[in-house]
Length: 163
Image (cartoon, rainbow, N blue to C red):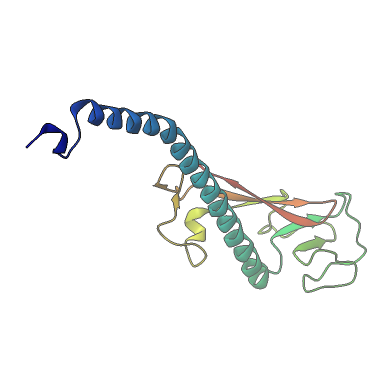
């Protein structure tokens, strides 16, 4: 049997194939890692939107039970001749804003901001095992959504503050 009829790869051919595969791996790996980081960043944005949605639902439930989340006393630049009924009284633009003639009840928040923690949102608004896709660690229960009242638009704005 002659050597020309033998099948298989020589050592040099095998080394050339391995070298080509190594070059391809070096070129492709950074792109794959970048794509994974970008996907995790997108997942994190989606997760934050989910948390803010839960805070919006929490706010709606609070408004159903407490009638207002943040009380605006007179003299703050928001004018309204009558108390605003949160269900849509005359002069009420945002149903979530409660106006007060004089002062607010002591139980009401007058700071124009309110915080709701992840721990509070886990009571029926968020999953228990919610994880940050960037770190793959659970969000701390002390992380919170700040709910701020924009007195010009009379709308609530939601900002997630993770720890």
